[in-house]
Image (tube, rainbow, N blue to C red; front, side, top):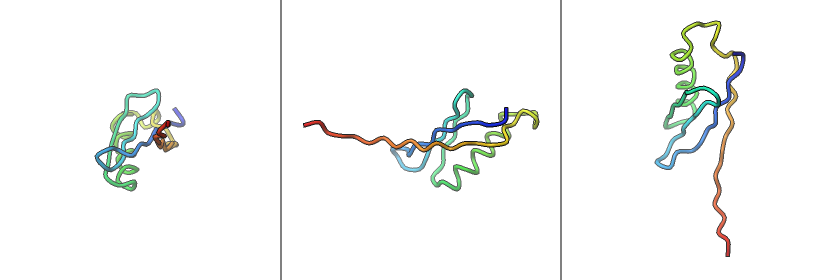
Length: 70
């Protein structure tokens, strides 16, 4: 695997969550810097063989916005 995609959301209780697409990986953190570090760490844990570990992680930021219909 050369690349992996994470969907980044702001958590309701504060901080951020990251969920990988196509792979069962999830992590969360209070700050963006901490989240990036956690993503690095979770990738190390998930992919035992360094050859399998993605070389690039794309972070896609998702922003939900509510629009009241009147």
